[in-house]
Image (cartoon, rainbow, N blue to C red; front, side, top):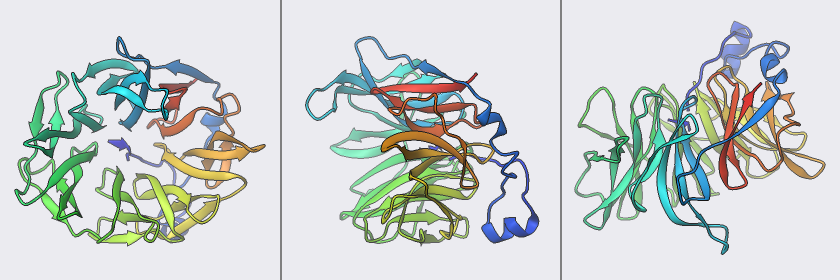
Length: 334
């Protein structure tokens, strides 16, 4: 799943009234993040396949599995040459595909990998076995292309299809193998599915005129208040950044703004299994990863280099996962 890229549970109720007002369950600020604040973060550089010297990450299950791309450093524009989809198991390479396709887009806690490949000059959605074998997901012949972009721990797969250059959001439900359903989808020029949580909520990034979108369990898309860009969702908590100002933000599952996080905050990119939010802020004009609880810094991550891009928190919040110096890296709580 994507944090996936969405999977999350909170431990203590801050109070029934507060929970109803915010649509969230939170921990008291003193208790929240106490474990994280006690961490000495120890760097663990993930393995790269033979012949590869750089890598990126696209999906992480919150514990063990991750997918991304590995290849060779391109000195023109910072890209990757010979890019190949790669699956990691606790930082060790479990699969590297033989060519530029299939693409590996996400993975869940069961190790289910989803992505896309090319069949008959069109992209089609697939699942991928750990030996590289692909299995095509059903689709409508009227679709121009379609892809599996996200997978929840429940096994529900979410993707996009295009028809006459219009986007459609598609769900392949785990409870009904071999079937799919098409969600009503906003008519937007750009749509990127970012994350899904285990209740089926989907967040998407769109063009600047729309901002971020969230699909809630009531079967409706809603725009995020205050023109925000969402990066992660867990148990209905949506986090991201505001497009019109430098601030991180949190929203409810129906797009209502819960809080903005200022004091140099840039964005929020992850939510841990106990409600800690991870992201980035400016410290003395330098971009720095950081952890928050209820909008307050719970761990400034002063021992983690500014060059580390924090993309995910593990379910137990004892591992930070991201990319540093163009390599997948984890920081573990010592």
